[in-house]
Structures are given as C-alpha cells and as structure tokens.
Length: 293
Image (cartoon, rainbow, N blue to C red):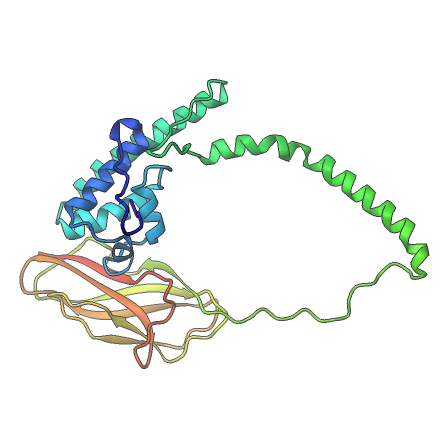
C-alpha cells in the first residue's frame, strides 16, 4: 500500500485482525475499481479526504474514521462501480463497526493487565485515543507538582540575580505586537437546496444553493464558482460570487437543467478568480449530486 516505485506492496493478511480485515476489503475494492492512485481519488474523483488518510485506511495499521472509510468506498464502489449508495453504506458501516468494536475490546483488555494489542500487517500497535490517554495520565497527574518546583526554582534564581544586575524587575516590552499575516480560507456550511441524493425529474430546471463562509482575513472580491467537469445535466461554466467580508457567510446559487434521460448527475465546482485560476487549492471541491428520474 503506497509503496515506492520498484518495491512490491505488502499484501495484507485479513486473518491478522479486524482492522487488517477492513483494510484488506478496502484494498480489494480499490483493485476492483481499476486501482486509481490515492492522489487521484482525493482530487479528480472528489473524495473528501486527503490522499494520506486514504492510503492509511488501506494500510491496516490504524483504524480509520468512519468518514474517511466512507469517502474511500463512495468514490470507488458508488461513483466508479455504480453500486447502490444506500446498500454500500450499510455494508461498509457494518464492516467498520466490527473493526471499531474489536479495537475497543482490545484496549479494554490492555487496561485490565492482559496487555493484548492488535498488530497490523507490519506489527504496528493499533493506538486508540483511549489508549493514548491512559498512558498520559501518570504524567498529567505529576504536572502540577513539576510546575510548582520549576516556578519556585525560577523565583529563587531571579531573587539572587536581581541585586547583582543593579536593575529592578524587568518591565513589559514597549514594542507593539506584530500583526498576523493576512490569509485566505473558507468553510462549507450546508446544502441550502437539493442535498446529495435528491431526485429531480428529467428535463426540469432547478436551482442548487450552497452556503459557505469566509473564514480568512481577506475580503472576497472578483471571485467565481467554476465548474470542473461535464455531465448530462447542463449548468453554466461559472457563477459570480458577491463581495464577502471576513467572517461572513454567502449563499451561491447555480441554475441547472436535468438531463433528458434517467441517471446520476454529479458536478464539481471550485472557487476561482476572474482569470480562471483556482483559489484555496487545499480545499475540496463542492458539488451537486442528484438523481435524475
């Protein structure tokens, strides 16, 4: 999984444990879907997860979150292999919950003194948040005492050095704090109309509205929502975004005509400037996903 060129990937053993079994199923699904790269899954195929998170999910060392697991499955099983979305979600949710339950059970056994951990295909311990928290407790319990000792020693050292310097205690610096550098950022808030999976009639027109928020410090001016792909559904190439101040939300509406025949319509959009240059490159595209029937 994710091996460098010239090296054969390590094939997972599904009998090694529940997390390895889940990763093995993901690995098989990826092969069945044509073995796209994780970068391709995260960008062109529209998975709402980073390529490193997708790669880790199929590596079998750590249990992925359900959100990452579903994005892995959605773009391959549903989008590429055209499996039923509801059925695929039920099946893979059951696989994930079995792995999560087993991981929790192993952590409980470790707490009672059995010290049993699940190892993945390269023998790496599954580390849950609960396991890490337990290991940190002794250090956290000692932290107040450690801080008190350090504070006392620091005060004594200052009291000894102050007379030698011939100066009073230092005062706060008069240098003003440097302002933080401006930055550009956004956050998707909701589908105002036509959430994913909405059924629309063939040949009809409808308006898709997303709500996003300017979470950066730069006002948005001269920006557009630009379509990235073509589908049987028809939509404008780009839609202008009004001026949006930092911290302010904006509703962006796109008029869409459904295709003349039944099928699925999924269109991806990215924020650009007026020249078409993509902005906020680290952000996933937003998309319209409806069923024409």
